[in-house]
Image 1: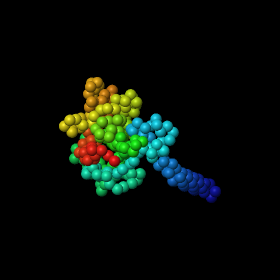
Image 2: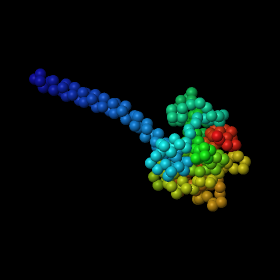
Image 3: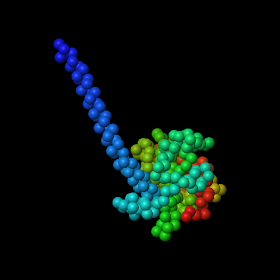
Image 4: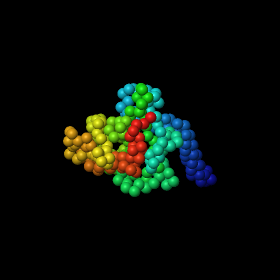
Length: 255
């Protein structure tokens, strides 16, 4: 009788022991894999930055080597547009935007980001002569389902677009996810961000932009809200609460 009464207790004890062992293994694996996950995340970011700089084909399998040779990451204060001291590798825009001490609510949150970090990282891409010929600016804004993260590559004039590369989104395949389509990406080079009045003029055009429209890019077919989100994101980040102060201070050339 006593043996039968002890059976459930032994079973529960065994289950708890298995759970503890599994939890310990998962915890150990997570700790051991974290450096690898961090390295993979950084490699993916560097790959997208090289794509935005039109250096991905040059890099081939040497993403890190080409990135380190041509790209310099620098911190800026978004309000003033000034370069500031800081570690770009340690900077996390998503973490900062959740910290009220390191972020603010935009006055005109057309990008739907809720909060904007005080600081940002910009990427200066130099040619073989050492001159800055491309500036990569990170962007974030709402799509249909969630925030979309990406990069805009600008010519040294800080007005001519070289590329728009999205790196993280949850848009619908075949619709909003067409932001990843090479054909759509190919529509951006040569477009202008600012009009003659210095106001942000770039936009996605429903039904397609005219061939001579230097500010218009074809909207995503069947993805009206995603297209509107991209336009709003660009208008926010190239406006006064985004990179406009930085751009205004550096239109004479970056060193």
